[in-house]
Amino acid sequence: MPGALSHIRVLDLSRVLAGPWCGQILGDLGAEVIKVERPRTGDDTRHWGPPYLKDQQGENTSEAAYYLSANRNKQSLTLDFTQPEGQRIIRELVAQCDVLLENFKVGGLAAYGLDYESLKAINPKLVYCSITGFGSDGPYAQRAGYDFMIQGLGGLMSLTGRAENEEGAGPVKVGVALTDILTGLYATVGVLAALNRREHSGVGQHVELALLDVQVACLANQAMNYLTTGVPPKRMGNAHPNIVPYQDFPTADGDIILTVGNDGQFRKFAEVAGHPEWADDPRFASNKARVAHRKELVPMIRQVTVFRTTAEWVAILEQAGVPCGPINDLAQVFADPQVQARGLRVEMPHPLAGSVPQVASPIRLSESPVEYRKAPPLLGEHSEALLQRLLGCAPEQIDTLRRAGVI
Image 1 (cartoon, one colour):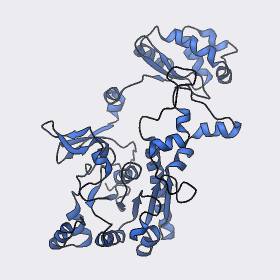
Image 2 (image 1 turned 90 degrees about the vertical axis):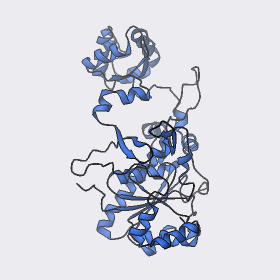
Image 3 (image 1 turned 180 degrees about the horizontal axis):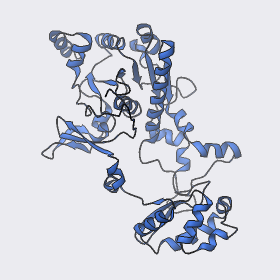
Image 4 (image 1 turned 135 degrees about the vertical axis):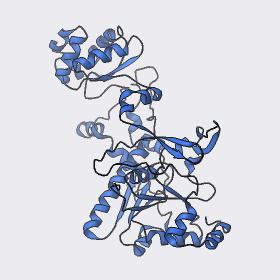
């Protein structure tokens, strides 16, 4: 069955993570995605290793794992658009594309005549998505933006890490480039919204995303905690500012996470823990009271959880209907029976390694399911085929472009 976006062609000029993440989602949904890369070097993340994908003899290939995480279902076209011939090719491709993704600095593509206003004149239906660190206006507009920096500047690191009075206190970044990922997701939503509007208006538009905007927007309840009180939230380790108990606790052989979301669940937990009186104690009977008396309750729970293993706690709490879970490393994640049942690891054929592992898309569509059509491409793997198919270039023209360093 054709994918949900099989009628859409995307020209992806982005690199690293936020833009490529958006491009991969669109590709998973069926769009044809053409990834434009610098000749000889390509996307920066191709070189962000080790680790690298290994071939069938166990030797490193040229493909870094980082690059492989965000570039499946794409075709790679190497193109130097700092040269006039490269700019001409981009314009000819834009005339045949529905979406353009880019994450250059503000105004960076205008020097080559590849900004939105210039390309809109060629293709009024074009949805042009720009991703920058800080947006197109404001005092920081000309700054480069990086995920780690934005996690700090945008407040996330003020909320992440052990509390100030605990050993090892201090700001900590999230273990993946979460701001980039979230920006890629918001970019996908923006592109889809613009494509939907185009169905009615007949014209495209400029979609703009800024890493800082996304990070602040995703502060969610913590932002509202501040905006409604005027008091900036503090780091609390793994504890929750508004729910207790909702954090990790030690067990006989590790740790367990309790996520008790209501008073009924707390009563069930108290019974399983052998302290049913906790649920009737005025200090703990309601979530509001438990938040107020966090310092008394949490140590009491810790004294109980250490007497059973994590597996024992998970078994008895799940049976009682109390939400909980272990803290897995990634080997345990991909060995988990639920993860395996959901098919969250997939294998795709790869020209250098035989196959390449991928993390499956979480999107499940009943009528137009996600497809895994193309492994993350080798640098320039599809250049000749794309130039021949879309622009009608003859072999001798392609040879000329290659000798000139345009492709």
